[in-house]
Amino acid sequence: MTQGRYGNRMFSADELAMVAAMAADRSQYPTRTAIARALCARLLWFQKDGSLKLTTCNIALRAMEADGLLTLPAPAYRAGPYTPKVAFTPASDPHPRITGSRRDLGPITLRPVSSRAEIDLWRELVARWHYLGLRRHSGAQLRYLAWDTSGLPLAAMEFSASAWKVAPRDRFLRWSDQQRAARLYLIVDQSTFLILPWVRVRFLASSLLGQLARRLAADWLTRYAYEPVAIETFVDSHRFFGTSYRAAGWLCLGETTGRGRNDRHHRRTHRLPERFIFLKPLRPDFRSILRAPLSPQGTLDHAPH
Image: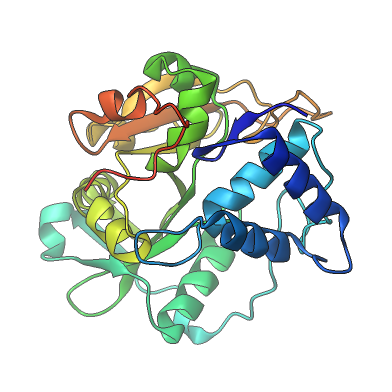
C-alpha cells in the first residue's frame, strides 16, 4: 500500500494501513462515525476551534473506500435520495399570495437557522413544498430562513458539502486532482433553494442569492472556523434555466453528465437528469487560493479568513 492524498493531507503507507485495520475492526469501530472520530484523534486532526475534523475525515474515508483501500461499515442511512418523515402542521400551511416586486416587500430578515423551532419549521417547509422533498446531506451544513417584515417565512435555503468531481467546474478551475482533494472543502454547495409557492415576488430570488453571497463566508466562519471561497449549485436544465442565478452574477460553467455528485468510478447504472452547474466566487482571488501549490506534506491546515 503506497502513500496517497485524501482530504487535505498526505497519508503515508503506514497510516493507510492503520486506517484499513481500523475499518476492518467492527467490534471496536462499528460505524463510520466511530472510525472518523478515532482517526482524527490519532492523527491530531483538529479544526481551528479545537473540534475534530470529522467532515474532512469522512470525505477522506469515502475516497479511500472508492479507491479500494478499505471497506467501511454500511452508512447509517440509505444512500441516494432520502425523504425523512415530517409531520405537517399549520405552520407550513399556504398563506395568502404575496405579489409585486422585491422593492414592495421592504426589508427582509435572512439568518441562519438556529433554534429547535426554526429547524423544525425549515424541515417542514422543505418537505412539504420543495419539488425534491427533504433530503439528507452529510458533512458540514448551514440552513437559512428568510422572513418578511410581518414575520412570515418567504424562503428556505441550505448549504452543504460540495460535489467530489464535476467536469465543467474542474475544467474551469484548472486544478489538479491533488489540489481538488486538498481544497474542495473551500467550495460549498447550495443544496436547497426554496421560495415558497405563494410568494410570487419579482427579483426576490436574485436578491436573496445576493444577500447569501455577501454573508455566507462570515456565517460559515462562525460555525466551522474557516471561510469558503466559492459556492456551487446544480439546476435541473429540463425544468429551469437558472435565470435568477445568472441575474445574481453566478457563472454558468456548463451542464453535468447525469452521473451524479459522487460517482467517481462510473458505477451508476442509470443516468440522472442533466443539470446546469453554477459557481459564485466569494472573493476575487478564489482561483489562486484553490490552485495554490501544495506544501511538501500535501497539507492545507489553514484556510482563508
